[in-house]
Image (cartoon, rainbow, N blue to C red):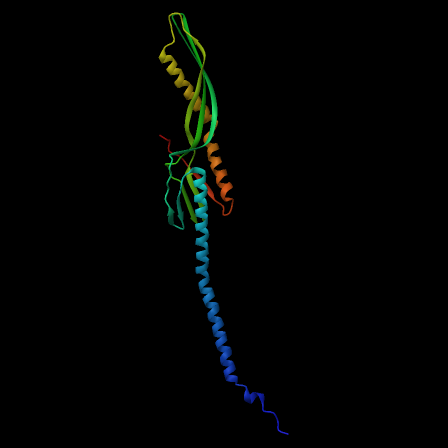
Length: 227
């Protein structure tokens, strides 16, 4: 009986080792290319994420303040600051004040007492810098502190108007009392810390729109006084 041919004589070991070697090289090249391209893909994903954060913050501030802030992402300016309005009031409060004027001359006394109702408004001067900076290490929203934008007179009530016999109330007396009432209303608005309430209102509204991911630093800088 004839013996079957030897397997070793028919199997080409040289070809097998060549195929294995080429496969190993191809796999190594594939892994190298994947590793080499990974930083580029990671960088692009990071920039895409920062751009999304910048757009979200821009949209939120437009909704809150009717202002587009200057947006800088990874040291590149994407949007410049624009606004159709000069001021934004976020907090308003009704104030009531009274003042009495007494003046005696040669034994004759005049008396004037007024009650005033005012509305104080606190918010932001949109002509000052509002900016968003998005970078790998931090996301910062920068804007001026809120301030009292105005105290508007709503109504004046005359509580007392008593002329002296030879010391009558003059127009200048009335005008001076109106000025005094307005000053009292402004002082009361400042004492009630309405500007700080407006700061907190902005911070709360921004957080409500964008959440806490990623964390955003809101930095208020000292505002120039509005004209």
